[in-house]
Length: 149
Length: 80
Image (cartoon, rainbow over all chains, first blue to last red):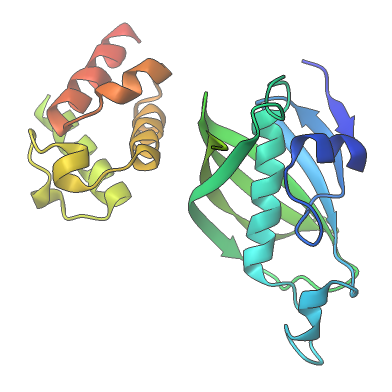
C-alpha cells in the first residue's frame, strides 16, 4: 500500500471537526488501516492557554487525547468513499493514556497511531505522541463510528 | 479447556471491571454483565492478542457468554 500525505484541505474532507476543535494540521504519513503519523502545531494563540494555566501555559491532556482520536479517525476513514456522504459521527469508547511530559506553546505533536483491531464500524488503536523525538504521551483508545441520524 | 476458560474469564473481568467470580459461564454479557459493543470488541481483541489468533468480525455478535466466547477462541486456536 502506498504511503500518502494529506494537507489541511484533504484532512477537512475526512474530519468533521472544525475551528476551534480541528486538532490535526497535516498528515505526514498514511498507510490506510495500518499506520498514520499526523502533526498538530501547538500555538500560544490557542484559547485554552488563557486559563490553562495563567502564566504557565500547558496543553490540556484531554486535548492531546482529542488529537489522537482525530488522527485515528483519519486512519480509520481514509478510503471509505462514503465516509463523508454518510455523515459519520465518531464516539470515543475508552482511553488508556499515560502523559509523560507537559506540552507547551511552540511544540509540534507528532502523533503515531497503529491499529490493534479495526472492524467495519469501530476500532481499537495504540498511540504514541512525540515532541522533537521525545515521547510525551502514549496509550490506547477505542472508538465507534455511527451514521448521523 | 478449563485453563482457557479461566484465562478468558480473567481477561473479560479486567475489561468490564468486574470480579472474575461474577462471571459465570452462562451469564449473559449484555443483560447480566452490562457489556456494551465496545467492550465486546475489546474482549475480542484481547483474546486475539493473548492467543495470537485472528477472529473475524462476524463472530463478534456470537460473544454472548463466557462459555460461547471460550468455544469461539478454541475454534480458532484449533485452526492455528
